[in-house]
Length: 298
Image 1 (cartoon, one colour):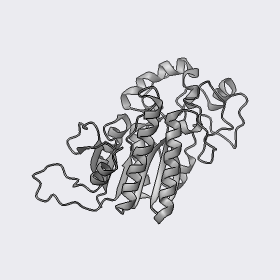
Image 2 (tube, rainbow, N blue to C red; image 1 turned 120 degrees about the vertical axis):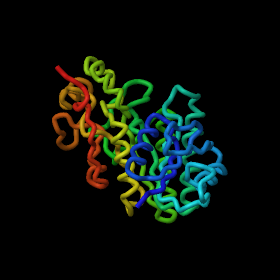
Image 3 (cartoon, rainbow, N blue to C red; image 1 turned 45 degrees about the horizontal axis):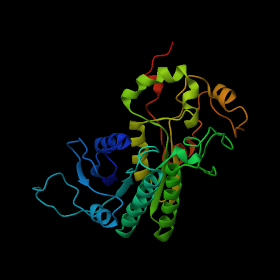
């Protein structure tokens, strides 16, 4: 059965790959963004997510490709996927990052719930753990970083993502809508594997992100699995590859860069420190694109 998906932010770095993955899996997608998406199978509806009226209208719009289609009637929507956001700090003033991300997410979730759309998947972030954009390098309370961690960021971007998770939880409690937040690791496009040798030579460079990564195509997979998995209510899932983005064993990375941070449980030799175990267990997520497929090592 074809899934009809409203997708915000499909023109962005991560979004365009996730949209393509969804289309390849047979989904019908309407891209809701401020910039067009160069994809012949997806129409973009230019929308300002900070305008509640525009969002309500967009999520109840016809999803087809052409204004001369035989029928322009709207059809039921199976899911809303919300990726639209200011993607990091230092692009716009901090207050604008927070305003757009927090207000935009509120508008999207509110419209989806009030329009009766029963599945919403939102993009949260690994930055919520408080390491990435901290003023100075800081240690987490423990590794691996899992969904039970007491997230405590200090920057406007990660703070907006924490607020978005709380917004999602609040709306999910109203009527039982399934709303899942994906804490997405560093997104790697296929061409970016050429950067890995440089990162291997300077392992400390990616310390702030705990060497996490997720292939953009695997982000498509976990998004689709979240769409297809019903009945979980409100949930948070880390979206990360099985391993780190370093060629060093995980234990060596910890010994060298986080020697005083306790480790809970056992970690595999190269296991990610942004734990994806919950997504594997509850969604059946199985990353297919590891850097080892694409990067030659000596």
